[in-house]
Image (tube, rainbow, N blue to C red):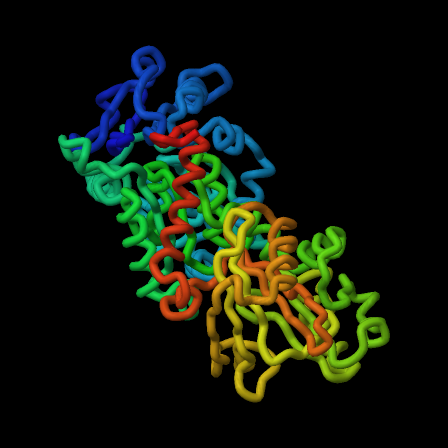
Length: 499
């Protein structure tokens, strides 16, 4: 079954509101959209600039009916409700990234009105990162946000929909470039046989110091997709507006909850895309507090652990012994994980970690020569790797005081059937606590034979020459094929010959 690329629909109050004539975009008046567009590909992106978004008004019904037709509409009904919510407005600037915060801090004025077109500032170009983050939190194609500086910091004082008829010539030039880059699609090939079955977005950060996949591995994902009739497109954070154009999202960038990767996953899932990593898995795996408690509740063996606040810090050494390990709730790749050899270490390290979080995780230290990493996909083992400790260090990766990697241990991958069966079994049990997606479960097998789960990773490393050393291209094909199967299940597509 072929799925030609859906042409994006731009909905406006009046056709004259849209000042551009661009190929690859269909412009429709709101009333015509409600009455004449009952059919069309379910994956059609719909960008609504309808200004009457009150309950049971035209813009509200554009969002409602687009969702009913299976289109991917921005803003959707939920976002429209957020536009009206004072509490949502108050939280828009919470936990913005350091780059966006720096942009705000550099503003000399006490107030600014930010006109955003698909997240791109039409005038205040120095606030580009802030505009991107606000768009991720409030995905409205055209919006004006009034910001005001108070003693306590910057606040959102008002939100309005962008009036396209008020754009200056300079505004229109910037906006046209945004439409061409982020929204408009090239004309689809006339031969349906040339069209891919599905469109896969691979989210990556070319500037990430320690990405979960090497450039060679990323290309292997793209080749695997092509072999399955899927077109893979590499996207970055700047491509948030393009999400409705895809059928699946594969995140190959280090994930975190208060991060754009989580917002990409949530938006993609809301738009009906198949997603690795899904937002629930990101949330559960990135929280060491959740994992510690959930694994314990499920009876999965882990090193003795405690959830600790300031009042319980003094009991850690007595409960777990020394040395022990303290973990920040949201660390990754070994960051925020510190071994404490003395009570003084526990107090100083714990106090520092508790400055950022009300609780942390303390865990008994279980030294081993290497850790097992069992890749789990759809509840089944995919690969088995051994990661050896960095020379002279107790972790796989040795870092300096700033958290930068200074050394790393060797790694080797073996056939799943050659890994200890009990290690694989415990890994499957641990992954099931998180979900049914794609995970990397880290385990230790102690000299006494005890098997302990250290953590479950929602975004496990897949590097060329390491995790793919046994399966080769098949490893990438299985991951992409799992995403394809999820898309097919969501759309109730049956393959020819399938029962």
